[in-house]
Amino acid sequence: MSANPHLGVASSQSPTQKSKYEFTETQDWFSGHEPTWKSLILQVTASKPRALEIGSWEGRSAVFLIENLTKDEGHITCIDHFDLERTPEGIERLRKIRNNLALAGGPHRIIDDFSLPALNMLLHEALPQKDPGFDWIYIDGSHEADDTLLDGELAWRLAKKNAIIIFDDYDWKAQPVESRHHPRRGIDAFMAVHEGEYEVLPSDYQMILRKTSDMRIGFLSKDTKEFSREGFEYGINLAVTTNNEYAMPAAVALHTVIANTPGRISIYILQYELSEDNQRKLRASVSSRDEVTLRFIRLPKSSLYCTLGPQWGKIDAVSWVPVERVIYLDADVLVRKDVSALWDSDLQGASLGAVQDVGIPMRDGSPYFNSGVLLMDLAKIREDREALLRVCHSLKDSPVHEQDALNKHFKSRWRALDFRWNAQGLGTYANMPSAERDGLDLERMKIEPYIVHFTGPLHPSMADIINPWVQPYTAKPWGYAGAPGHPFAGEWWMEFSETEWVSWAGSEGRIDERKARRKQKIEEAIAKFNNALDEQELQETCVVG
Image (cartoon, rainbow, N blue to C red; front, side):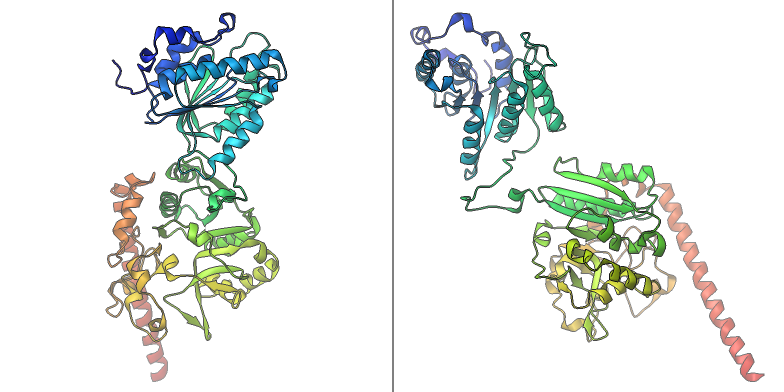
């Protein structure tokens, strides 16, 4: 006997009860599917399965589902217009299905209406429910392709993840399959729209799918008391700038965003001549979750990225990212929290949101922000884009590059965000006292950062590493010298192991690269040391002479 709790129920129906079912024997289009359906029922794991039928006729398949799937603790909903009870035939079919489902004995509901209004009603009813949706859906209504497509789409929004969805008459012989009067055309269109969100199950005549994506009703009602950002289908827009050197940390940044943030995310990667291999690895490192999309934007040679340098690419988002609002992240971050709260931050009319710089909190008497994490109102920024570009070119040689330009342009038009959204200098300079830093509230940032920003050089100089006044030194975990003082370096490596670059960590290539970088930094230090002495000797010679 099968261990599945939904099989074997039919045996409880007595022969006397079965004989009372009122089915037109010449209209049995279902019984041949019973063996397939019984094998499918084995795959339904819900303890209280709910079934939905579109096109129930006299209830033959509905009775089967009650007896084998829903009778004990489940429920079935049947939709059929029954000619709106305006014909004798429609009235008779409605009488028969009521009789048959009552005899079957399981909880049921009959909606005597066309599928479009009936499904819309079910969707609205599902909105306030804590556990909405159906585990089994059978679509056998109209044979018209457009009707079948519409039934499929609305029913799909009522289907739970792992639901069994059956389209009848995929191999119907009464009409040419390419005709709009054949359901296959509508079924194929439906499947094209939802490609990647289902698994096709074996069947000879019907098209049977198992849904692999989450249930999404797709709208809210004005009467809905509780709602979330996802209900409005806006989603989050995310931008990252990278090149071949920073593609690997960018993968960690994106992987951790997706791992911590549910719902719809659109990712835009700004780049120029990023290798095909690195693009492939980035795609593979990003979750295959169907709510997440990734697009590479190849910047033109006229972009700031190309004319001033890759670090300026974040400002190119203003011109080239085709949305109104975006979260920008530097590639050297580790995301540890759902960024929805960051996305939902009220900028209160400001053009962008940013976190004050922990290393340089003030500049020219004003708060100075770090540009590694930005919430950008692109629509507002575009109103003054040309002025922003002029500032960028005028400060192209500024010590902190694009960060100085952004601070100058948005001096009074940015809103300060919680330090936890851009946790800088952890384990290093964030712990070092200074007159300006002492006035910052950094304790929560140190204890539970939302986004860890690995500031500092990728490959620090010898002077940085041995400076006794700044220890531990500031650097990035994946650089040749690591980040020994950073409390989240280990966590970064854990997340790194989930990317396509995982084999790089222990590779001979990385070992050789670290040795080469170390040698380079030693040689640079010696050269700088010798140059300093040579200059000093020259000055002494001039004085003596």
